[in-house]
Length: 366
Length: 213
Image: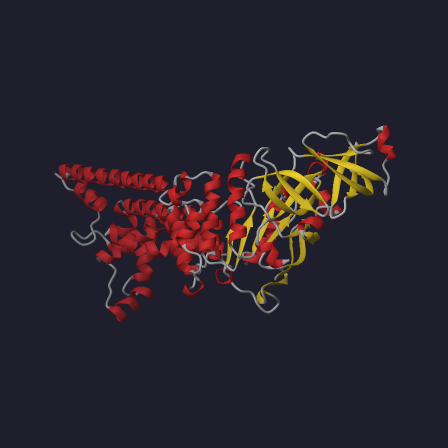
């Protein structure tokens, strides 16, 4: 269990955050830029001292009214937004820095494991300035891991990366989260990263916790919607994957009495997976659509209708076993037929939906 | 002698530069001003103050002589002291500038990796300010070679003991047929100065390449 209560004031900005999250697992701190995510991370690491609060990991108190453990004694591995590699040391020298300072009896992550896991072998003799942004972050992650931390914190490791680099780094992060049974705090302002990696989400908004919980239940919360924005709204469904269809390359995911065909990076038959279904990718029909092409049809009952952006209506539909969000344009004639309790059919285009295999550690925590 | 003065004052200069950049304490501005004083005072005044403080009857000089038998006035060590005091601000300045440019985030990163304060200073801060330290040392060394006013006031101009290069040159000029000697000394001065600047530049270039800046 990671228990955090932090109160502090910096000029105009006031932070008052309290949350508890199960460990091991991937705890996502999610929120817009400037909401205080990095400040919370620095407080947990001990790099800044809260005015009051309490920070404890698995029963060990790092900070309270009586105690304030120095950062070098907390054994919390940090990957900063700007990587912060030591410019005067090679990649190998950076990796060994934390390893050499970790107490002998804590050694369980070996250099060669980290090198393999993060694909660092060819980078070892290089100097930090010779690395790309994504490579820098991989080295920073490796360096933090080798300090044999009790908790790993990643502060927006993908924020400074372009889309291609994000795609390159995310699989490493997924592998990392599922292989290590180590609690991870993952800071992000991108909800898709949270969906892929997190087991527990803490949503921050202007220095306070807006809401928290597991990803599937949070995906429909109003507080999260306000931060994710109209484009990012969607349902998160937990299901079980079948084997990948060799012909279409799609994987069928079962949940409740239904199933959906989705795209997945890796084949994971029998595994629990998470489908991120954006509201804008779901169509609503009043009668069963005849012969849908490359789309799945789900039947359900409208739970609620809510106007969201200026021209659209957010429809929440219970399909039995999951709640799915769909966005429809407001004002058209057929929309007026929609009402809570009404039976509708949802069309999900297989080309848009994606499923992720969330970290295995999540099951231990659940 | 200039080498000795640099060797003695370097650790002190690093400490002072660190204090001035990293610590906030009462009287910091005054301390800053005192450190830089030799830069703005006439060198003769500095020599005079040294004479008063470190002379055999002065408060510090007297104590040194009684306790350790160290005599500074009219000695080589005294000349080194005078040079050190004069070039100290130059050294502090160079180190301070590079210390201000060190990314504190790197020290924080080292902290989270388990490095204590001294460990951090030796493995992160010091290597990062090394170019500044070397540049400061070379500048101070070159400036030390040319020190005239403070040296002549404090330790006089004794051949083979406290006669520095510029003092020797000045003495040569006073002699009826010293032109040739003066020219030779000037040439030595030139080469040493040029060498110092080249070394400083080379050091800076190597450091830049290693850091990829």
